[in-house]
Length: 520
View 1: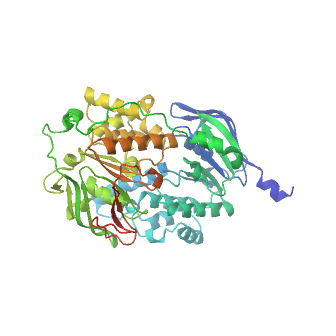
View 2: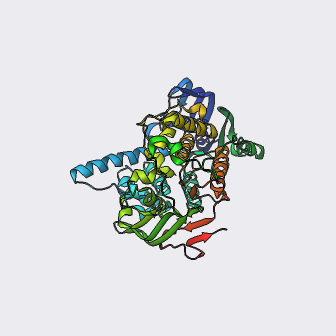
View 3: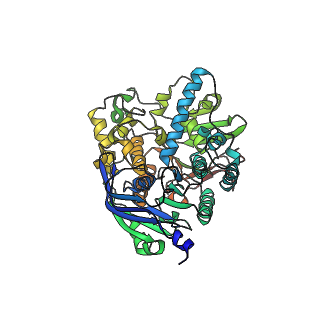
């Protein structure tokens, strides 16, 4: 064996019977694992299994309480290990929110752009240009990072992590939030990086996301490492079937607002509502000739869209097509709603109703909400906050509200994590808690922006079955966003298609590439 071959296969990082600690929890007891130079690994496991904690231990950001973690190469630590995750995205956006408050009071400064975020990271300027081209970031460089979609932000952070030419790059669920067109291009870009010498550790929820170039797989099941080794030896058909097995049957539940149900909304939501029942109207959402711009960037130019009671809609389109902006016009998080003709439940926004009067009738699950929910609260408190539409729990819930929250936690298999800190749960567990938060108040309109993002196979099946039950058996209207065709639930009868370049959309007539479709 020549010297080059020996160096290529030499040990890089070794874990010897390591047990990890995350807060007051012990994870993956007695784990042994060796990463050798030239190996590219994928870590697969269900929600809450410790996948991200194991990757963070490699980076040096998650402590171990037993065993040894040996770094054989001094370059395999610190700044020489890049890391991209939802948590990093949260931190950057949180810092930008603080700067926004400072700009508001001082009147100075401007929003951080994608280009400034990249140029502020040390690295070779030539490498920056190359990464911008590989990840198709050039059209985004002049835009504020808070105006970018979830998927666009993900590609931006991957480029940022690659600028210092790390020895190892850890990608924690990098394909979540990416559209069907972006996933193959990102996979090809990461595969090319592996061929050129960047070692990758990929944390993934789906076996199909183990991209070409990944040579080894570590599989976590039942709280321990079930297998670790060559890809073809670990990802056998039998193991894949077990890994993507069926979810446990949903408990027998009586969904709120079933057809013919006369249960009053205020009986469920207690003192969060006035005691009068809101006026019912056939129209849930109506948008007329909508124009939304950010500087010279035109998101919508003449959009018309109507959602009627009894209809369930999907909103589809590539990253950057305006899906999140569209939803922010409904929830009131986008101030441009007041410069447009937007009607909710038959009333025009800005004509006397408060944002709280609107939100009490809407349930929302989105990546953006999850990014904003950084309060030090217990999981149960997060779910209870849905009654009050608050980020954090500042009012005392009544006994009936507490019972409803516990009911939804049980439905999602989260009852045993009710008292755990929300910030100490996995990304997928956070998503389940936020879906429960949206459902506790029996909303008239339920907005689901990538509800299965970050969920393992069993939990995806559980959530999709529940969403289908809500859409089919209740009076709650659905607006549903997903980038995965296999997650399109049967109760969806209408589709609004958005495109990235031309954004004039109507639901008057179906068109092949852009517009609205009636699936019934």
